[in-house]
Amino acid sequence: MKKGLAYFELKQEIEEFLYQEADLLDTRKFREWLDLLAEDLVYFMPIRRNVKFGEHDERENTRQGEGISWFDEDKWTVTKRVEQILTGVHYAEEPLSRVTHMVSNVRLLDVKPSMEDPDEVTVGCRFLVFQSRVEYEHYTFIGRRTDVLRRNGDSWLIARRELILEQNVLLAKNLSILF
Image (cartoon, rainbow, N blue to C red):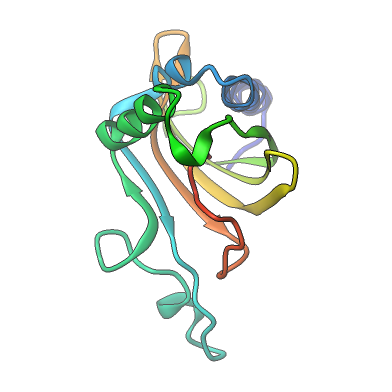
């Protein structure tokens, strides 16, 4: 991918979008966060397995639509999760968790149709999500993410999010937070 001025301007725009998205989640502005999701959203987090050398590409991560995953959702199911949290009686989020999302290593992996006039951008990044619950529960989720962002006027919508956690056993009691 050629890295001229258009590349760096687009990269900065995408980074700002991702940072603002993280702020919405961290400040519990879940309804505003939902507005960043495309109607045809795919929100997927596979389960990771420990596999023998040479089998990583085929077997390390579960496949979307095949078997079990941590998340394999669309906008409707993500919206229902948010609505449940916002009732104030969600057992896993009462009181609400304190969460910090960190995004780094942002890379533009693909731009369509062109760098000068992008309608869709595939973005790779790394994330760290820290969750603090009540007085004694603290969880850290670290991984990498691939997002497909679609142009929406002057901003972007998240059309696809695939999250790869760097652990295959989660110590958290639940996955009620949003990534």
